[in-house]
Image 1 (cartoon, rainbow, N blue to C red):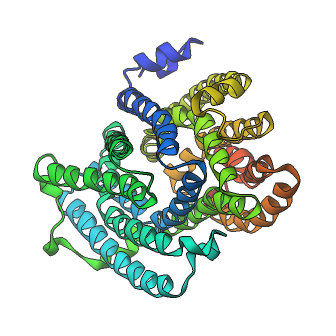
Image 2: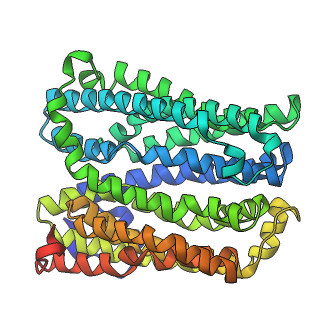
Image 3: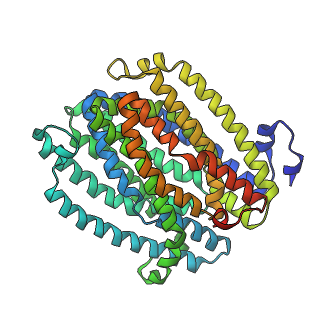
Length: 455
């Protein structure tokens, strides 16, 4: 293994490494780079196209609604992460029957969860006034109810079918999983472009464009892979075994709570902005988020293969590889953070060129967003390692505390600092990723982690 001979020229050596684990990660990074680069271009085009199809206010309403629906994507009770870890283990042991059982049982559990979601939705939808919740005119109630019903139904189907992404990830085919997302985005762009040429601005059509296209991609990709490459582990009724539910949901429940915290720390920002200010401020925040989101998008391309890779290295006690890889990732993070600083310096004219004068933007809110993405990307290096080891109890505990602090802090800072105040609140509440996770990583690597640090 050449990892011991790496020079200070970390990037060329990293890309030329003949370590099998690193080489596989590099292949995924390079593949994801092209795929997610295309996704960035699509997102840059789709925002002004969408705003021109409806308007900034209606787009803000859609973003707030989609945030509410997106909450449910985390309500798989950790099944996604549970399946990823256990399926990767089964594949490593070449136990195809166990892999098929895990996949089949996961699909069955997801169907049961979706049925529960539908029953709850039917009750809630009947009594709730969506216009009142979103502080919108009562005259929009009928349109909102139709939109939410359509998007929710499509989401429930996507909730089940997107399991193919987890299966691809467990096979360490991260770039392929990213390609499915790219296809969904591309179809959305085509759909919205057609809408701009054939219809007037309509929120219902917009919801269909964004919600139906991923569903189509996941459906046909699932058929393709289960008929070809993954035929031996394709789900079947006979392979469903609910006794594996506890195995799938054991570690997954902790991830589930962590995911709920992520919802509150990000998704509720749109709702709070709508409550504190207006729909235009929601649009402004999301333009700001998408612009600086390039930072985390680029870094996530680098990080995406390493959850499974860190897990593999940890269980093989390859601490040399782990430490060298973390050091390289920190150097890459520093480069990307510097690039983000350049983005900040030119953000005012670039955002104006991108979306025109219809969207509000301030350099202060841009700085806050840059700081948010830089700090969260830094923390992700250590969080990915800890997730790979499964020692997430400390992360689980802090995830319970963070949302409790976030909402009152966001309201307080939001009133005084505007949009930037809510972003600073997210940074403050990410204390685990920024401070605790690096310390826990060091303790685990040095074999000094005891008690809560080792659970």
